[in-house]
Image 1 (cartoon, rainbow, N blue to C red):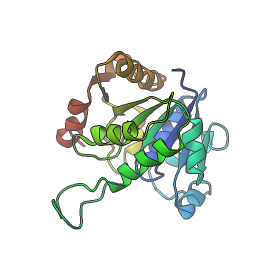
Image 2 (cartoon, one colour; image 1 turned 120 degrees about the horizontal axis):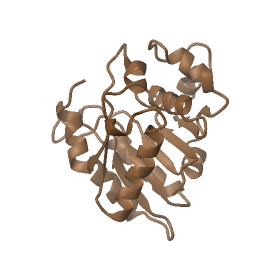
Image 3 (tube, rainbow, N blue to C red; image 1 turned 180 degrees about the vertical axis):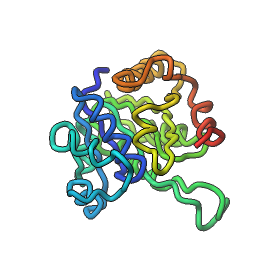
Length: 224
């Protein structure tokens, strides 16, 4: 699969900066960050961004309107992209089993359902939210249960290790980039596709591919 268009669902602290850096470093890709919040998207399109991080302003303004776009048209972003990042909130559960401790996957599952509903061709779907182990499996189950003829999905895990105050520096020069996927031919091809994006600025030896479970687990135990 040739990647020319990237979509990020969620214009928050992970999605906005991560995709701004991808657009900045990959002028050959069109990157669209989508969110249902009209207010948040308006801020990303203004002179006063919704997040303050050193260098973020310069990175966004270097490519916004060229190959970086912020939009409330979630469906259009999903339809057009070959590669989709899920960067939505994973709040702590407020009721039921795991209340006060477990992550609530409702926004991630909602994003997966939206992708399944809207997608008209095959996609690489990348979970980049702070998620517990087996979230990729949950996403894959939703996508496969609602799959259309001729549409195939590969679900990857690509945990973020951003620290407040150094997010852009962390993204521009990461110690490592972890990519988890299944070990099938299609899974390996999808991991290679995402690796290709990162190789625009990250040395190959710093990009590590592994199975999905290991990648998700590393987020929970890895350094911030």
